[in-house]
Amino acid sequence: AVQRTKLSKLLQIPEHYEILLVLALGKPREKVTLETVGPDGDIKYWRDKDQVHHVPKRKLDDIIVG
Image (cartoon, rainbow, N blue to C red; front, top):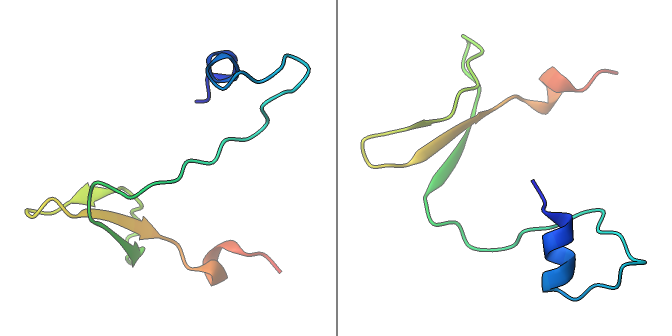
């Protein structure tokens, strides 16, 4: 969640401007692996014994209607 009031004060943004979006940039602290969702359809994130963060993603063909 974006704390717009706090961020506006911190960055000294005039009140007549409104923060609509915030983009976070940086280098991840952990190793992340994206993988295709398995046949069971489980999309839960998980970590292996080496603390690699596994993130299942659906295929575009499975989510785009058309």
